[in-house]
Image (cartoon, rainbow, N blue to C red; front, side, top):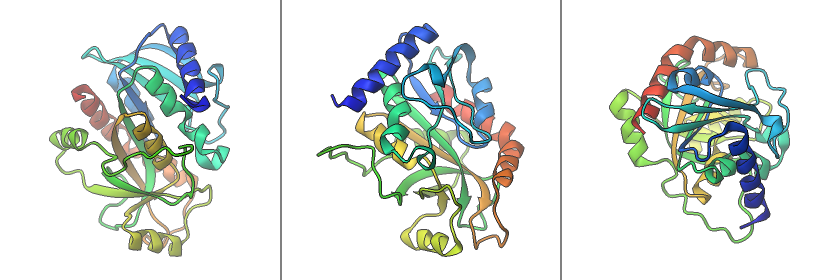
Length: 265
């Protein structure tokens, strides 16, 4: 076990003591627009400030709240909401980005739902659309893995969980997500590059977390909320308020979708 995984196990032990929940089953990372889903997924058993757990710093990004929530779903599953996403643009350390995922695995989670708000390179898949991740492209030049850690990435996003999501909403389009480092939004030329490479979603999260999750054997479902058309696609300039507004408007619908998916997991 590497130092990073030992540190995650330490964090998981403290989380367990703070929540009174010995083992969790499912971990959720709720990105821009997805926060309301937690209230539909189950009853809150406990909540813990992220700053009380080793390895997490206070956040300053609007729309992100650094709290861990332990929920009990109607089906008896223990759901851990990881409300302290550490973006690469904040910490410039892929290991820190991965810390919450590794902690969730050490806390017993076997499944992970990664969500985000992102830009779309497809005009027909515009703001308010939910896209089911099929694959990703790592454009950060970084990895949370250390040394000769050869992790199979041929099927990052679980076909089984994708089928579950489609059984609830068969209209969900597939998507390939490209992670840029940020925090600046992508230029039109960078968006065109990503599209040429095969991406149709662009954002600043998810990919490094997915790599860490596959290392520890988590089964992953990825869902993206399109908050804007990417630069050069829609013709408008981009700002963070637009992302927050799109997430707020779509919130009730996507929260109900995610709650239904988690119920079936």
